[in-house]
Image (tube, rainbow, N blue to C red; front, side, top):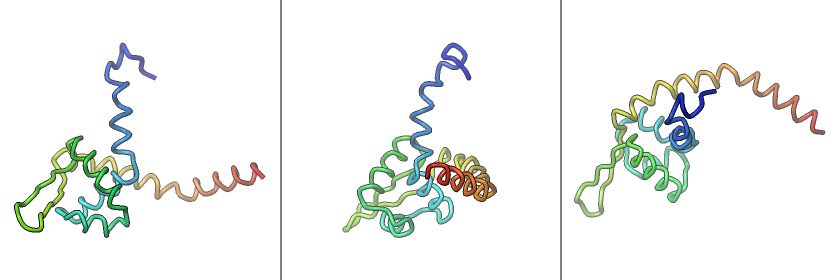
Length: 120
């Protein structure tokens, strides 16, 4: 473990991990990675997410610089979302985490079964 003297920004990592590690943020980034630029309702339909949760997730990702929000002056308003360069750079760590999860699904299932059996 690093202490604050060795890593003065370590305490700030929690905020970053909260954003990039949250379920909906990861799914939005994956969706934009696969399809490129998408409109709000396209993302909503792809993920099966509520309008409120998607709105909050997109605002957080935009604030953190992971996605671009482009609004067009049309009626009705047209808004598109795409990954920024920072968002693009997040694809590889997500891919590694996804592969790890796939490789370890059986071990995780076994551990859960053992834990659940011991709780009974």
